[in-house]
Image (cartoon, rainbow, N blue to C red; front, side):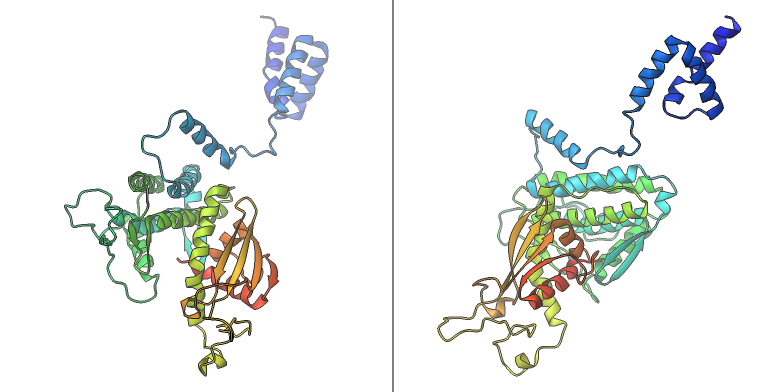
Length: 412
């Protein structure tokens, strides 16, 4: 091979890097001079430059969040699952998989980043592995209800040490609820204590091992949920007992929120839940709002009229209560219409006054319009209720009351 041929091959080997703009300026100038006199290299350079144009650095390399669900739907349409996951378990399945995908990409330095986890009582500061310990600690309540081992060391053992791993009966109206030990102090003290215990137990382990352990636990919960398609098994969180179907949606919601917290800490993009999953999360939060409203009302002094026995005014003293009315057979409680905008669009009627005011009825006293994701962020105490964008119509005091109560749904 002559010196000219060797130089030709050397310059030709640079064509790929040149097409991507990765050749030093001096070599690029020499290569372009060569291309002017070498039709063979010029043709190859044109093809490579055209191919490089398809590699736009401005477009994200991550696949769209909906792609995974589309592939799964296509696969299941061709071959149905032997043990399908109930619809109420799908949000948890999707959100845990999405968080796992994020964590698999984290490097050693990113595992040391500290994520901020706001809730209505303050802000927790946890590293990603500690967030997983927290998620697993709360998931443990579902595990106990389903007859699985509690991931938290020293936690309650369902049915004793020799209990089989099975799903408790679904249809028995008087089925015993696997109870957690009584708690003292604030309602969330037990969750914080369980998180601290599991974090201490896994301290010193490689973060990816903690991730793998959490992921196995998620899979066990999903498989057990598939054996309980009605979702009636009661789950005792220590401060409240809810059906399994609601508990799974609750866990999906917290996994999404804290996954986004971790992504924000490591500067990583994170997709919102699929619209059908987001709607389930919104529906659960809306059904819990009357409890949050009652708690908010109990935490503040009673209005002057109510203290004297006047029952015509609403609990917030806004003067818009329905009263009994001279022709009314009974008192009715107020309601507010919540309109959710965006992919998870829908409407809900929220009772405002609690059971003591009588069954809710009549026209809503107000209507409020929020984006679905903004409502979920508000419920997670990640938005200021005084600043969240909301469309308002009607009793503004009632709307403010609901907005301020929504972050109370959050917990550590």
